[in-house]
Length: 469
Ligand code: DUC
Ligand code: ZN
Ligand code: ZN
Image (cartoon, rainbow, N blue to C red):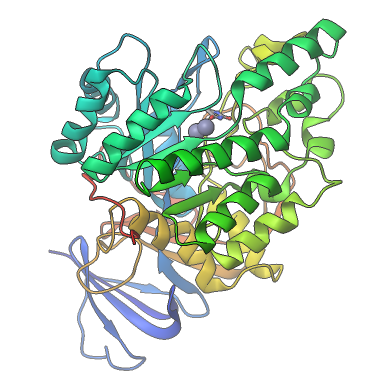
């Protein structure tokens, strides 16, 4: 098997950064050497990482390729989305199987496998969305956890009539998780109340994209988050993972639950750390549709951004994912001209997450170690992939990013690789950049070029949550 030596870099794991050389043998990491200790080591390929960081490949545990939503499909396939991810230093994605009313969970998971098979450029895994918690679906949860390597299930307190589960369904799914060890992922927004406010807004003639954000009140994210926490506790301290947390109110509930030792975890996304209701969602005319996602971007006149960055520092927010769910402006976002409720929810981001959170390091908001932890190590451990993924250590998969802190670049739609006709991050400057990306020992990105191939990525059967008390 081919050997690769990465020399002269600063190896950053969550425990700290050290000067070290990394030897890869085939698909895994073989050894780590102190500077100068690898002089006799032979390798077919040598990668010079002098003055660069050598970090575990990013793991984005929340993406939606080709998701049916709002009468259309998110515009990235597993191929285009995984290539975009690789360009940005992400080497594992976790997407979702989707069960809707009347559908059989196992069939929907099989369909998702068929879609992804032979197309992904990086490794991938699945959670399962339960949109219809029936007796059969509850039994299917056991089977997925035991036999399919799918150990987490997403439920929605939002989107009545589409993906929504009521409290009875949520409690039953949590009770099932308490028996089979699964983690419940929750989209925590009170969708019933939101739909009332949305209807009233449209009746008033408030139809522009910004009203999507105005009616999806942060208090309704806080309320739903608290309800999910209470239900998870009633079900037996079942592991609850609150997805795409955007609001200070929701974070306060998560922090309070964690303070008393509950198995409550949460992620946020770059859009909730950087973008605002006024500056992006409130862009003139229909332009703001580019930033319609749920939960929505929050107002800059409260302190959501500062609270979320703080939550990342304190670990009340454990993970940064993207909720990557791209829709083109032309013909997809445009479905909602004249009625914000018909704008497909979501934005593209899988390519930019590592850069955007690294910028948080440059800006003094996070440490380098915390960047690695929130973007790679914790997602791996949370979703049963550790220590195969999420760390640079002997025996782990050689998913490695050489990251150059001396490179400055500006994000533009023209230079990004995701299959979408605009960028939600247009003009954002990053004081750093991906130099080399390896997936299981194979170079995927180097010298500003893609060297990977669709189908290189393997499905990862996952273990259960590694953080349980
Ligand atoms: N939120 C989005 O913005 N898009 C997809 C689904 C979701 O929950
Ligand atoms: Zn969601
Ligand atoms: Zn999502």
